[in-house]
Structures are given as structure tokens and as C-alpha cells.
Length: 301
Image 1: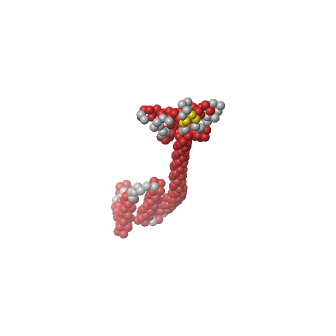
Image 2: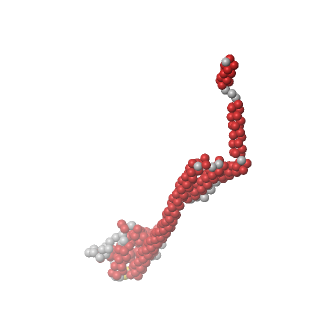
Image 3: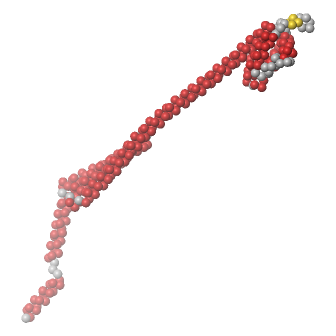
């Protein structure tokens, strides 16, 4: 068979399928018998053409197009109409007296169409099932992610509560340490005149050393809780301060052991005594004049 002629016959076959899918009553209403006879004649002409047979691919294309575009018909209607044609088909003689029998062809057409309909519906059901399973899996993943986020948030909230409590406790310790240091320092300064300069200086240095170290360490701990990173907080300023305080303490102890302040006080007192003695030896000029005048008056008398 010529390829072009074959394509024309296949096109006519596809058109018959499209026509049969349009209406469910096309073969069953008052004019249905005439319509049915027309379809039988068209199919007999096709199937009795030498070399023609319907292709499953044509059936699949028609069904797929109909299923995707409802304006072209319905695959259910097509199946029902083919079922009606299969049951109502009767062998008849044509005008030339020849009997044409395409019952087996219609039977095979009906079977192939229903097979393709089942395949399309099954594929669609499988696709829908796969789509739903994929949506369910996506939903499960989202639920799992949400649960993980919720666990992280709960842990973060719990950790934040602990951090807030720790920070409040540290600030309370800072306030207590600072207040206690100020109170102690005030007491020391009030009794400054009752103790030696060495003791007062050592006490002030020790108070400053203790307060600065405690406050610095507490603020370092707060900074670590608030920032929550691996940044290393420098302690070189604290080390420099501690070394300076220790150096001052050593100097004070050395001065105390050598009696530096006492020796200085003795030297100052000795200088003041010498100055007072020298001042007392110097006579007042007015007083000497008065004594001289009295001595002369006494001689005259």
C-alpha cells in the first residue's frame, strides 16, 4: 500500500474515533440507526481496503488527545459507543450482493480501545498516586524539619533561660562585690589616721586588686554568654594591672621593712627642731633697744 494512501486511511480512522467520542446518544437516539449504519459502512470500507489495519498508536493518540481536551470528546463515551456497535453489528450484503463481515475487526477495535483506555487511566492513577506520595513525602520532610526546628527553638529557649539566670546572678554578684568594696574602702579611709601609711596603702592595693579581678572575670563571663562565639577575650589588660599592683605591694613592703617613712619623719622633725632652736637664739631688736635705754637711765641716777 502506498504510504500516502495509508496515511489518508489512518486519518479517516482517527476521525471515526473522534466522531464516536462526541455524544453518548449518537447511536441510540431516533436517528441512531442511520448514524450507526453510516459508521459501519465507513469501517467496512476501511477494513476491506487491501492492506489496511488499525494501529494501536492511532488509538492511543486519539484517546490521549480526547482525555487531555474534553472539547474533543470523552474516552468513556467512545468506549460505550464501540460497545454498542459491537453488540448491534449484523452482517449484510452490499449493493453488489457481497456480504461484508467486520465483526472480528470491530471486536478487536473495541478490545484495543478499552485496553488503551485502561492503560491511560492506570497511568493517570499511577501518576496521581506518585504525585500524592511525593506530596506526602514533601509534607513529611517539612514536618520533620519543623519538628527539628521546634526542638532547636525549645533548646535555645531553655538555654536562654539559663543564660538569663546566670547573667542576673552575675550582675547581682557584681553589685554585691562593688558595694562591699566601696563600703570596705570607706571604712578604711575613715580610720586612715589610726593606722600606718604602709597598712593603709597595702589594704587599698589589695582591695583594688580583688575588685578589679572579680569584676573583670565576671564581665568576661557575661560577654561569653551573650555573644556565644569562640572569640578569645584578651586578658592582657588584667595581667598588666595585676603586675602593677604586685609591684606596688613589693615596693610598699620594702619601704616598710626599711622604715623609709619613719626615717623621713625623723629627718623632718630634726630639721624642724634645729630651725626652732636657731630662731630662738636670734634676739628681737626692739627688745635690745629697750634694755640699752634702761641701762643708761640707771647710770644717770
